[in-house]
Length: 620
Ligand SMILES: [Ca+2]
Ligand SMILES: [Ca+2]
Image (cartoon, rainbow, N blue to C red; front, top):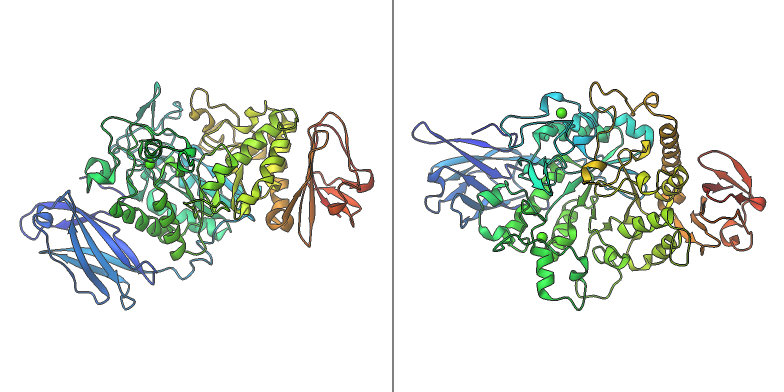
C-alpha cells in the first residue's frame, strides 16, 4: 500500500498482525448542514468487513445508522447515516461487526456565503488557467515515483510540466493588479493515469480531466492542503475561486472502473462507442432514442468510462462529493464540464441539491453548443418544452463565435459584427443572460490572437467586447500578454507554459520588464479595461441597448441610472460620425465622451471614430 494523500484509514485487524485498507467516502462531514442524510461508501480489503452482511452501529448521540447495504461488489458497504441536530462535532466512530471505523464531524463554517462560497456574478472578471501550465511554486512535487505517470518533462508538450497551486498562490498579486477578481482552474482532482494514447501521441493527464479519486486533489498540484491554502489566501485578497467539475466521466484507472461497486455505475457497451457529440439530440423533437442514448451514454474516449448518472447510488455518491468539496474548500463557483453528455435529470438534481446547501454558490455549464437556442436549452430559459434545465448560466459559445465572426469577417447582412448584434437580440430566450460566462477563447480553442491573424487592432475590439458585453467575462491565461497558437496538431499548443512561471525561466512575462512592446501594450490595455469595468455599475450590472449595424459600425450602450458607457466598433471602411438623432435615446443629456483606456475626451456633437477603431467611452 502506498501512502496516498486521500482519506485513507488504516484499520487494524482485531486479531493477527495483518492490516487492511478501509476507506470511507466521505471520511468526514459537518454538523449544521442541510444535507444530514448520508450514504457512506465503505470500501475495504478486510474480508471480515464484507464476508456477510455486517451489523453497523453508532454509539455517538446524534449519529444514527439507518440501513446497511452490501453492493454487488462485496468489498463495498453502503451505510445510510442520519446526522441529527443534536450531533456534536468530534472524532466519532462507527462500529461495523467487530471493527470500528472513524467518522469525524466538523462544524460547518460560519462564514459560508460571507467570506467564502460567495458566488460569482457579472461584477467579476474570471481568469481561466491550467495549473500544470501556469507556474511551478514547488519543484519537489513535480513527480512521484508511485504514480502511474511518474515523470514531469517541460520539453514535452504532452507531459506534465510541474506547475502547481503554490505557483498560483505566489502570484495572487498579479491577478489583483490586472483587475481579475476570480480564478478558474481546470480540474485539480487527482488524475493518477498513465500517459494515454490520443491520436498519434502519448498524453499525460496534465489538464486534470481524468479523475481517479474524487476526494483527493492531485499531489502534483500540492494536494488538498495546497488547495485549501490557496482558496483561503485568495479569499483574503478578495479573489474568488471556481472549481471545474466533471460528472460525465472518470479516468479508466478510477476504482469506480477498476473495482466497481456495481457494474451499473458505468455505462457499458460491447465495444468502445463514442458519443455523437450532437447537443441537438437532447432537444430535437424528431431525435431518435438511439441517437439520444448514444449522446448521453457513449464514452468520451476509450480511456474515459462514461458514468451512468441515472444510477441512484452513483448519483448520490457524486452529489455528496460535490457538496463535500464546496464545504471542504470553500470555493465560490462550479464550472461543470461536458454537460451535454450527462443524464439530464441528474444534472438538475445536482444543481438543486448544491444550491439548497449553498444558496450563494454559482454554477455555470459547459455545453459546447453551436447555436444560441442550444446554448439556452441547457440553462434556465423561456422555452415551453418538456424538459427544463435549471443551471444558472451557460458558457456562452454562441456569443464567442459571434465575436470571432465580428473580428474575422467583413461586415455583411449576416456576417461580421452583425453576428454579435443578431446573437444578443436572441437573449430573450434566457432567463438571465447576465449569468452567462462570456469569453474569446479557452483551453480547447485556438488562441484568440492567432484566430484574428495577430492583428492588434482587432484584438482591442475583442477585449472591448469581452469587458463590456453582458455576462461574466473569462480571460484565458496569457491572453493579456498575447500568447498565441492554433490547436495544431493538438490542443497542447494552446496550453503552453506561462513564461516566467518556472524557476530559471529566461523571460518573466509576469513582469513588465519581460514583455515586449506589444505584449506590454496588451497587458496595459487589458488592465485598464478590467479596472474600469470593476468600478463600473453600467458594465457589470447595467442594461444593454444595441443599435443596428450601420456601414460596418456596431454601437451599443451599457447603462443604468448612474452611468452610461458607449462602445463603438467601426469595422467598416468609412469614419463613423455619431449622429445625435439616431442615438439620442442614450446620448441625450451628455455632451462629452471619455475613452476609458486612453483618457481622451471627445465632444459628442463632433465625435468621429475612424475606420478600424474600437472605443469604449464613458459619457459625461
Ligand atoms: Ca511543482
Ligand atoms: Ca455521458
